[in-house]
Length: 403
Image (tube, rainbow, N blue to C red; front, side, top):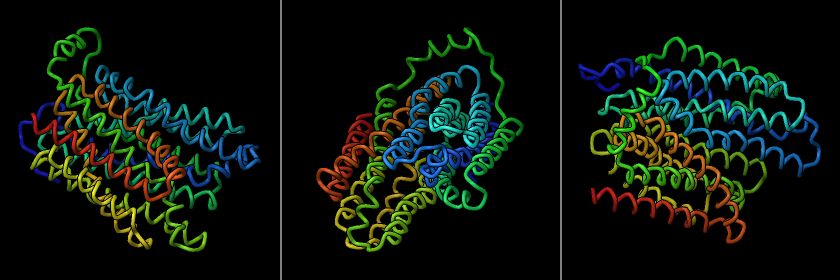
């Protein structure tokens, strides 16, 4: 762990402990959000949906509901975090998620599951709240490393969720899987309540006026560029997801082998990001976050080109792993650049808008990849995504060079 200099501000005194709590809590809540992906169609059947087309529709609506409500409410929670405290928002998110997950195990109709998934997104947001708290409390010299560690925890939760979702239901049943996950999130709630430390603040109009006067200190053009960069980054990452399985079927035979290879390809990119995020964050702290962001985007764009021309699954696994390593530190760099270019009192609001932009990329990316793959084939999706990444790198290079 990096050396911490003496003379920290009061809100930075507990940054290491808070980082640990946020990593564990974010991992747990992300597991909960992605847990039901493997068994969602089966649960829909248990809830009374029988036609395959209806199961597909209800499953899609239920899975996307959480991300829709989370995207809409992220700026609100960020603004409330600035005014009333970031710890309070994490307590709300963890307790709300624990209740919503437990209730999902008691659903008796598909509309109830959709409503509870909407509620989970509305009340949740632990990972985005953790990002705001870590960005605001970590000393500037270690922000990239700390956000890289948090990003690794978030990515690990996204990987572990579907894996646990495939293992738990056969062992304990679908409903018990929800209840077990709710209990785990409740433990994260207790850790947040009792272990996480935040400097007390006073709420009210008097605490808002200094923020209003400080608004001119925000570098809004750079912040907006980071919002766009975060959206395009997630867009490019997710555009490949819908076509991976179909793409692998072009050079792998057998349904089971295709499924296994698709899982390995997706896991390879996530593993690369988990391993590289803290290291790239530390590198960015040393040489500059803008530089790491631009070069990382360029490397990702270049790695997408050979992915369009692979002839074996192992080649795609290697390339996705390398791309994951390049991607790992980019989102922490974006968050750090926002944090360092806005006043302390606006961190939550600005990062809340960044979260909403990333959710927009998460929705648009798969749609883009699916429609383009259906119209032109699988390989053009990689090349089009390469163009998006290259454009994002060019925009950042031109702006940051002019600074």
